[in-house]
Image (cartoon, rainbow, N blue to C red; front, side, top):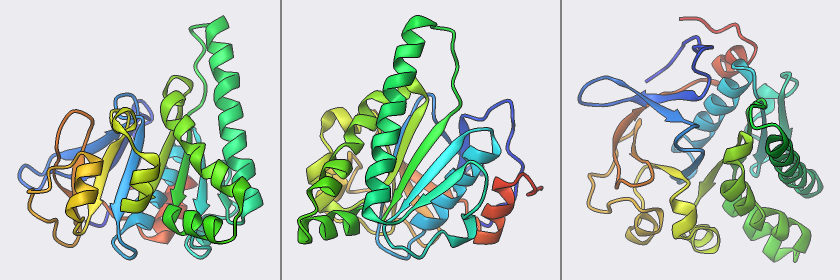
Length: 248
């Protein structure tokens, strides 16, 4: 499904992911109830398009976003968009993760002093986590490994601070980073065929029909998933959305 839309400024926490294939009703990622998202997909199955959509929507609705691009080629069209940063190299990535964790701690202290304080939404998206992890281990880059491991802290503490994590994942990374506590705070989109072990690790029913091209299995904490026809933004549409110029 190719999507062009104007976000509802009164509901910035709702990110349109696609539609229910049976009813045609829109399906949203709701940051207030599902504060983090894991995307399980092989390269070429639509992860980058989804991350473009989420990052652009965040900026278009008044928040800020950073995309960590483990592939180094995917997000050039979003470079220079106000409120949206792209990180490529290990030192940049380490700085970004430290910055987000530090911001969470600052926000939580501020909320403790003033419970009515509302901060702008921040989203950190990682595309190519498995590649980054593999390269860091191969290069014995312990600083980068620590930074990638610290993504757990965003999942566990970011929600109360208005900070959210979106990341792609594979079975090897799921073993390293996911446990029952993390699954309870993370929604999952499975694009294409996931092996049985990965489905189990993500909490998705492995017996669900494999999603066809352009669809996914959508699982929120507490359920085992359902089919979803995915929204899709081209690079040009994502750029226009982030700048507030994309209309129905």
